Image 1 (cartoon, rainbow, N blue to C red):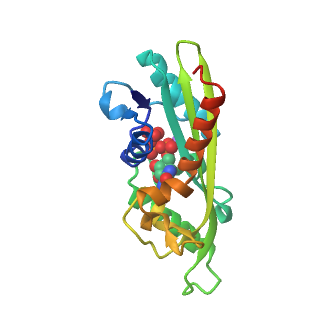
Image 2 (cartoon, rainbow, N blue to C red):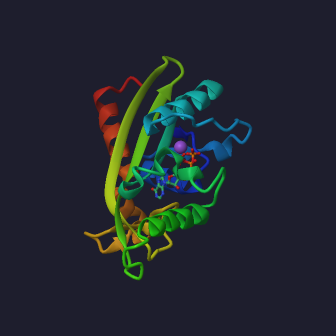
Amino acid sequence: ELIIVATRNPGKVKEFEHAFAQLGKQVQSMFDYPELPEVVEDGVTFAENALKKAKAVGDALGLPVLADDSGLCVDELDGRPGVYSARFAGEHATDQANNDKLLRMLEDKKMGEDTNQPFLSPARFVCSLVLYDPATGASMEASGAVDGLITDEPAGCGGFGYDPLFYLPEYEKTMAELSMEEKQAISHRGAALRSLIGMLKQQPEI
Ligand code: ITT
Ligand code: NA
């Protein structure tokens, strides 16, 4: 069985492949449909953007599609980068550029404080998943979140995006130092996926 995920983010693709393999499902992503145009993500919320992506791809393919919109919300930056997480340092910015910009902004905020102190700044990863079926027009949304601390001492090479900066005090590790299994068990995406799967069991028509 096949599940189409409307993403061009290779880090997300790996995580969905891993999660759905456990359910006996194979994942296709936008790398399998390179002809489809990029979706404009001008929504104000993660859920709005996830629905836009699922609808655009689902309607283009005439097949049910899952989309993921996610990001990092930092308290001291009033929730930024939020829905702008992917393009924080500019359109198609690299993860490294986004991470550098985030640390620079937090360092600027700390001016006047003892800047030689390593800092830990409260933040939260959020993920919205939308499953859309073009045959009925029905959609289903589930979300998940995980709290952590932004560290200015990046660590780990697992995961993707902001993971090396996202420190989990209970584990004394960053998200990038966790295995795929560990990340899935605690991450915003893992939580959203479990919630969506629970909803599908209640309401299996989509
Ligand atoms: P698609 O829209 O094609 O799925 P994208 O990377 O543009 O890919 P988003 O618009 O949802 O996806 O942006 C999410 C950004 O938030 C992503 O680029 C990462 O920088 C960050 N992010 C989301 N989930 C993350 C995770 O599990 N670990 C680290 N960073 C994450
Ligand atoms: Na987005």
